[in-house]
Length: 161
Image (cartoon, rainbow, N blue to C red; front, top):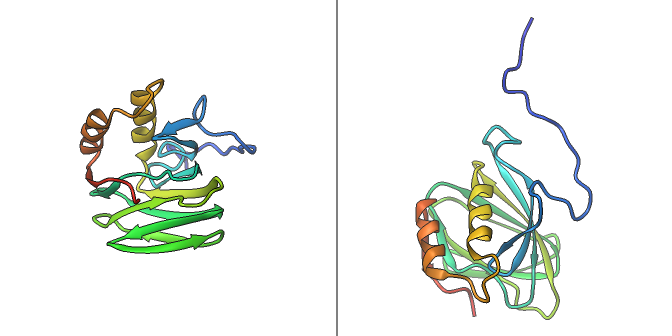
């Protein structure tokens, strides 16, 4: 008889639901955690992002994770290694670890994206960033950068403009 000591739980999530008690606020973007490292034995984490006009993360590089972007709705400009590409719904981009990247919604309407990060664990970073900046009028960039560094993320510049 074979036993599975690290058997994972199966589950479903309805529209608007995530794996955290409430949506996360990541520098002005609402993030629903869809899969965590605990859900996948550390393999991956998946997020649903609501990206308001003129929002996006600063230019950065991950030393530990690969990141895949998939545009569900709207138009997102993704920059990977200095090459900006406009992605409409159905478009995707991939930034392997060590790759300089960012994205921005330059449109007038809110966009929706899925982001997959491998290996898992990035959900913990997102939860800490959300908690760190909750209730602030503007993100505490110095403390956010310190947290980024603790997770092996190098801040390289501002968001796209």
